[in-house]
Image (tube, rainbow, N blue to C red):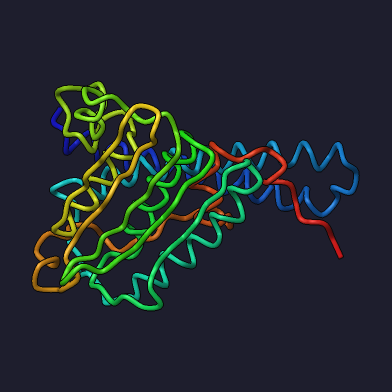
Length: 261
């Protein structure tokens, strides 16, 4: 069986898993109506955390198929890249504070680009998640250089030696393309940048953190021919994109039902 058939099978499996997760989410929402004591709220928080982590895994399965060379084609759309980064950054900043991670977002007031917005958000989530796993201070910076956008995520973690830096964009399966291997977030980000006609570059030194920059052209004429992903958003069962994307980092209390007024 070839990779294309395996990918389609994985996509179908992901769809079936989503049906089960939807039922679990509905049950959780019903339980929230009667969760008035601390113990019940703790148990619901653990349940919601598990659902979000499973949604993240399922979403990555679907994303693997979306990023394949034979995936359905769609046209990119004109978007305010700065607003996209700022809004997702604000939500991630609030969530990561609960995990003891400080996120700083630097971007212009406006930066128009032709992009697949859902993929750019996923790329940013993957890079920030990696940075937050490595260190306690993460910076996101978006800048315009000529007709190119540069999105850089920097952490204050332990950094990487040169030999590790060379294999950063790949996992352990030598027979699979880099973006397929072992769910590697940086490899996924690299594939997304490539689909936008750009590339991912990393810089690091031991003890001095890691900096990863995605650069891609702003215009339709350079990006359109390289985008091959369907414009379909993940179904996150009512949970926010950032909550699902960062669920493996956040403490269980983040997923507790909100206090009733």
